[in-house]
Length: 434
Ligand code: DLL
Image (cartoon, rainbow, N blue to C red; front, side, top):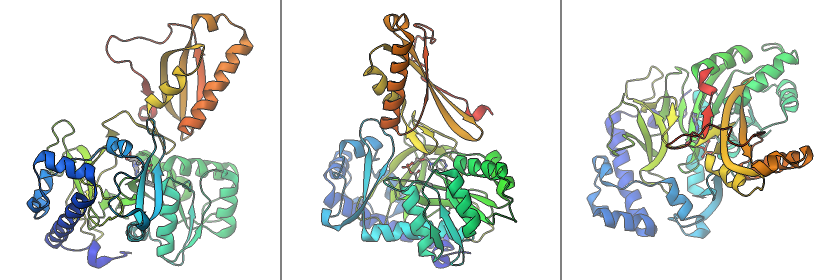
């Protein structure tokens, strides 16, 4: 079903006009209220009057994640603090978390964006939607919750984890739609199999909205065979709204971008030049209806390709491909953003280990795993087994508390991690090798 057909099926020319009008308003609002962006525009010699429509977008300077960190927590708010009704945040960034402030209107817009996504996944007021994304600062839980509520569906706010209980509720309440990270969905599906729960008999899922981490067509096939349903991709990021920035329809051929709320560009990450549809590059978003913390030309560092060919579903919005990589070194492990530098930060504070380490990310039984291989110092290497064990425990605990995920810690002999002359290879990501 198409939730808002008048917008979602609008002809491309009218959409560009609407975007242009909203862009002009957003730039004026941002320039008037956000000193950092005003200074950046001044530096680039661009005034709000120079932005007359969508063709002027490329005149505007970019915004980066570092801006959010530098201006943490409220420096990028464009609306008065008293108008902000919600803060959401992003997990695991170097040093500071990043947060986004939403006005009442911003929450309503976001809710509609997710409602469109869920509607494309077939959700109606008759559905029972189990939200197994984490609730909290992370936008997954509340985002999916609000979208399903907007459609009048019955929401089961499970949050992430507690797998047996998830499956018990799924069976007993008759869940029809599942929302969580794709890797967790596979884990749920495999556990359901082990418990002897059969699709069509014990479980009645018809679809699911899965995102917050990269996944593949192979994972889709696996998920669809486990649950006998339609598994759809949903994309988003805290800085822009949360889930629902873009979403797949039943054609399963790219994610429609909610273009009346965000303008999408793909740029060459080196030169910053806009690239045409069909050419892979870095995704950049400009919010055009947000008042609390608008983002102009925000560089996501996610890599994908745009597709402006017509879609058989009837929606006219441009589609983005799956995310195929990132331009920076951020890892998404079990839906949590992890920077190698965070782990480095933990290791340098612990006595008995050297700063030589390597992260090994893998996918075992459809779940991401993280192993941290770290060299002991010579002294510690010849110390007692129990003191080495104490170091291992300390590292594991601190990584869990700083990064938010559990890791296997392998303490290895001094000088056993390969050195390189240039940059150290800190990360071995084996997930795409399977
Ligand atoms: O992950 C928002 C979200 C929640 C999206 C639930 C979908 C479902 P952040 O924690 O700020 O927000 O992380 C954003 O996660 O820049 C991508 O690198 C990655 N990401 C999000 N969705 C997808 C997806 C949420 N469908 C970062 N495919 C983004 C691949 C994704 N990567």
